[in-house]
Image 1 (cartoon, rainbow, N blue to C red):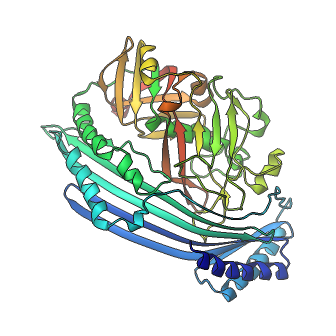
Image 2 (image 1 turned 135 degrees about the vertical axis):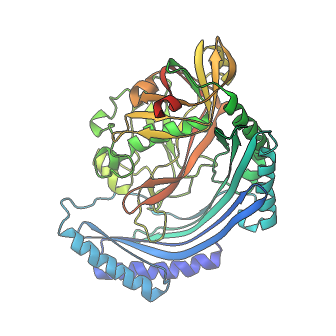
Length: 493
C-alpha cells in the first residue's frame, strides 16, 4: 500500500468517522480494504482453471446507546462512507432496544502505524508460466511411481491491503500475504477395485512465493506417489489400544479442533454454536481445568513468523500479541476481542478480531494457536524408541468432533506401524479416537524446538452468515500413550 493510497484512504475514513460522530455514535471504526486472490488448478499434464479475483470496499462499525451497528459498500466515495456511517448509527439505535447490557470495550492505545507480511517474492508478480510449470512438475513427480493414475495440484495466493481508522485516533495500514501450494495423488490397484490417495504435507503459510521454492514440494510429490502405491499393499490396522506419535503435519488439526475452537470465548459462553457447537471449557474452569499433562503449553500468537493469522494489528486496531491458553497443562486463557475481554475480567483484548471481507462484521477469530516444543533435546527417533506397540501419523485426514469439543476421531495421510522401538511398515484404514482432556493428559513427550513446524487451515469456518479465516498451528512431534485405534474400513462395512 503506497503512501499516496494511504493518504487518500485517510480522507475517506475521516468522512465516515465524522459522520458517525455527528449522528451520535460514541465510538466508530472503519476498514477500507482491497482483497486479491489467484487460483491455478491443474490435473496431470493440463491446466484446468485459472481465477483472478479482486474486491475493494469498506465497512463502518459504530457504537450508539451501547449497541453495535454496521454498514458496508463497494462504492468508495466520501458521500458513500458518510451515508454508511449514518446507516450504521440508525441500525445501532434499533439494536439498542433489544440490548440487555451495553457493550463495553477494553481499552487500547490508538496506533498510527503500518505493517506488512515480510515476503521476498510477491506471488502476483511471479510470471504465470513459472507457477504453472511448478504445478505440472509436481504432477509429473507424483506420477513417476508405478501404479499412480491421477494427480491434481493447485496454487492459491491471496493478499489483503487494509486501512483501519477509529474515532479513538487509530490509523493503521497493513499489507498481508498468504500462499498455499497443494497436490493430491491417487494410486489404483491393478484390478481397479481399490484406490489410495496421499495429499501434500506442505502447509499454507503467511509468506510469499519463496515458500513454494523452500517447502520441498518436488521431493514430497515423489514420496507421495510412492506412499499412495504402498498404501494399496499395506495391511489394515488391527483395532485396539496402543501408543501414538503425531507429526506436526497432523497434530495441527488436533490442536485446531480440540483446543483452538474449544477456547474461543463466544463458544464457551454459548453465543456461538455454528460449525460443531459450543465448548466444555467454560469460564468456571479457568485456572482449574487440567487440560493436559504438565508438558502441554499452548499459546495464541498473532506474531508467529509465517503464520496464516499473523498480522501487525487485528481488525480492532489491537497490536498483535502472544498469550497463554494452557500453561503447564492448566487452562488459563481465552481468545478474546475488545468487547469480550470484559466478560472474563481481562483488562485487555487478546487481539483476536477478524473479518473475512470489508462487508463482514469483525468477530472473534482464532489466532495462531500452537503447542510449544519440549524444553529438552528430543528427536522423533527418540519418541519411536520409547514405543513398544504404536502408530506414527503424518498428514491430516478426516475428522469428527462432538458439539462440546470433547469427543473426537481423526484419520490421516500416512500411517507407520511401530514395534519394539522401530518402524516396521505402513498401515492403512487407520483412525484414532479420544476425549480432549484425557488425550492431552496422555502426552508424555514432545520433541524440541528444531523439530517444530507449522500446519494450518486456510478456510476455518465460523458464524452465520459464514466467515472463513486462515489460521496456523505449530508443534513439534509428540507422543501419546494408550490411545484407541479403529479400522475405518471395518467400521464402514
